[in-house]
Length: 267
Image 1 (cartoon, rainbow, N blue to C red):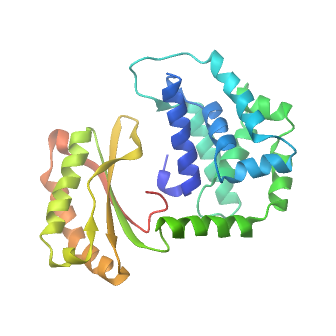
Image 2 (cartoon, rainbow, N blue to C red; image 1 turned 180 degrees about the horizontal axis):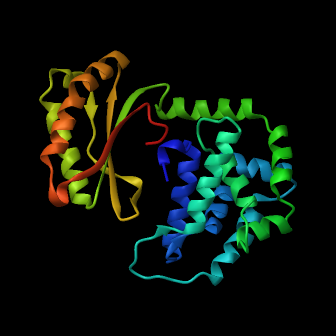
């Protein structure tokens, strides 16, 4: 799953689904967890769509939570995306492409949930409630996206997020958390030695919202600047050092992937 292709709200929903699975000591993150996360998401578009379909989002979430009762428990194991959940995300991404949207959003995830094939508990629940792909398309055409987008921009401005601030995020993936952290700590040290560092703030490395995926540990480090030009000058000097730093790491400290995301959608 490419989380960088998910909108901020979609990333938040997947993270909430993971937290639900962990709280319930379930072995996998399933579409049922995602359905609860979407129906309960504060400020999200899915609760608004459900209301347009004359459904109470809290009632939908409550019925979806009842589906948890039949799920197997797993103690002391890492929570992973289930194969069904991976298919949901792939279907949502395909729906975003079909609708000519650059990013996969919560409505794409909801459409994928309603359209899941086979004996899907979440899809069967939605069908009993009258929520199908066709009824969702109809509801989406009646949704006031302009007002929703304006509210999202207002939230980002209040929180100091792009496009109202100048940020970059360095993300690293390694087989161990120590390896990813060592790379980011080394990157911070390289940054501190640059003259351009005076114009930026480099924050400590932290795990990503979903820190472990497919036995890969993911961490990130935020860089902030009051000036976009200053941020770009810093990045131009810093990026060559990161290539050198990656080549210097080997064994358990070897970095599988790293990337710098300018104006990240989510922190």
